[in-house]
Image 1: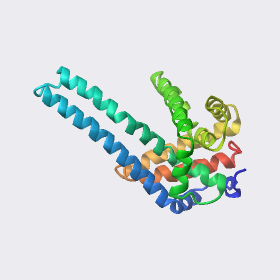
Image 2: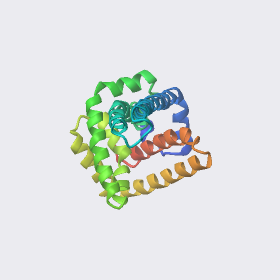
Image 3: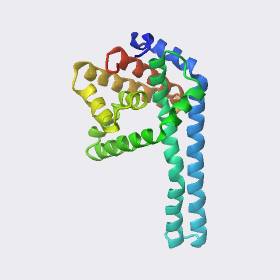
Image 4: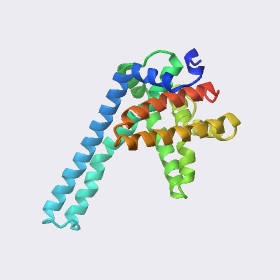
Length: 227
C-alpha cells in the first residue's frame, strides 16, 4: 500500500521538496556512479596504453588488440556495478512514495543489496529489449525506455517474476488511456530535462534528473498506474 503522499497531485514544487529531502542520498548515488565509472575507464585506458606500448606504438598490433579486449573485460564489472547503483535514481523515489518516509543512504543501498541478482537480471532484460528496439528505427527503443518508472517500481517493490513485471509494465502504459497520457507527460518531462541540461552545459542534469524521477513516480501513483 502506497503512502498517502504518493497519490497527491504531482507538481514541480512537490518533486523539488522530495529531492531536497533526499539530497544526501542522491549526492552519494551520483558520487558512487562517478567513481565506479571512473575506475572502469581508468582500467580500460591503462590496459590500452600497455598494449599499444608493447606493440611499439602500433594501435593495430596484436598486443594492443589483446590489451583492449582485456581492458573491456576488466571494465565490465564496474560497468555492471554502475548500472546497479544508477538504478537507485528511480528506485529511491519509488521507495519514498511507497513508504512515505525519506530514504536514507543506508536504506537505499540496503534495498539494492537485498536482491542484487534480481535487479541485475531485470536490467539485462530491459537493456537487451531496449537495445533491440533502438536498432530497429530507434522508436521501439524509446517505447521500451518509457516504461522505466513503472518497471523499476515493480521490480523493487514486488516479488513478481521479472518477465511478468516487464509485460505488465508495458501493458499498463500502452493499453490504457491513463497510461498513454502518462507517456506523453513523461516525454514532455524528458524533453524539459534535456533542454535544462543542455542550457546549463550538463550541470543541470545533477538536479533535473532526480527531480524528474520524483515527479514521474508521483505522477504514476496519482494516475493509478502503480497501486
